Amino acid sequence: MTATLSAHWNGMLSALVLRHGVTADGAVLVRRVVLVAGTGELPVEIAEVRALTGALGNGVLGRLASATVPFGRSLQQEGIAFTTEPVSFFKVTANEALAEAGRTVPGTPMFGRKALLWLADGRPLGETVEILPRV
Image (tube, rainbow, N blue to C red; front, side):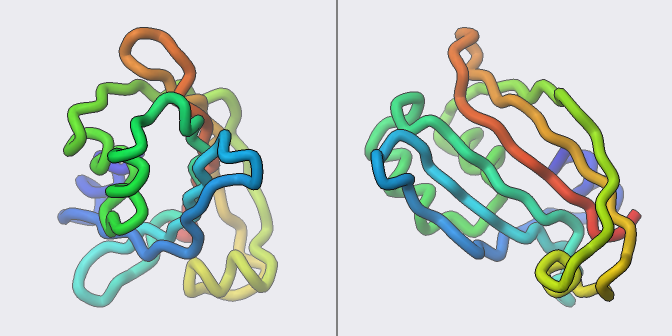
């Protein structure tokens, strides 16, 4: 969805990383970000990616920790091809946390999707939930 959002907002998006770490068992990388557009850093997406650490090398995992670009662009820069398979779409009403992340007010309707991520060879990479704070 990042390429579509970049085209809509007429520019590259950057990631404000809210959380980046692995689960206690080390099996899953959890990365929570707000994607922002432009110099005013307008929030255009709130996202969480859960990637299987076994699908990524240790070097890649280390470099992702300092990345301030969207997850998909980071993977492209690493030469990792993947696809996204949307599995559901939803509407939520922003609570305090979502409203703050999206720089809007509680009660704002937001739309999103859940998607599965697949490596080019068909192995699972992980999943993501993406929410648009404004449409």
